[in-house]
Length: 200
Image (cartoon, rainbow, N blue to C red; front, side, top):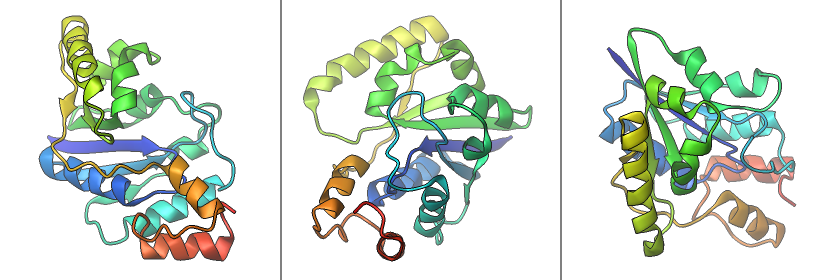
C-alpha cells in the first residue's frame, strides 16, 4: 500500500514554513511520495493575483528542488473552476494508495464545513500542523476533533513540528515595503521573485 501525501495551498509565495511542514508530514506519516499542489482558484479565501499560477508552480518547484519524494503537481491549476479538495482526492484515490491530506489549523477547524466532508474523511486521513502559537485555540481543536471522530470515525492527526510563525500574506506585505525576507524564503525562490518583479 503506497502512502501518498497531498499538500495544497496558494503558495504565494511558498516559504520555509511550508517546506518544513511538508518535510514533517513526509517523515511522521511515513509517506512514499508527497504531491504539492498549488491551488487554481481557492473556494476558501480570496486569491492574491500578484503572482500567476505559473509563477506559483515554479516557486514550488524551486523550493522543493532538493527534497526527495516531492512532486509539484498542476492538477488543480489545470482544472476549470474552483479547486475543491474533494475533487483532487477523488482524482488521486485508488485501491493501492492510502491518502493523507495536510492542512493548517484554520482549515482543520473548518473541515466539517467543506464540500463533501464525509467523503473527504473516507478518502483520506486528514493531518494538520500548527502554524501559530495561540493557546486559546487548543480547546477548540479538541472540541472539533471529538466532533469529527463522532461524525466521521476519524481524528485529524496532529504533526509534531516547531512553529514557523509567518504567513504568505505577511511576506507579501514585507516585500511590498522593501523589507528583507531572506530568513523566511528560499534563496532561489527569492531570486525568482526579484527577477520577475513579483509582490511589488
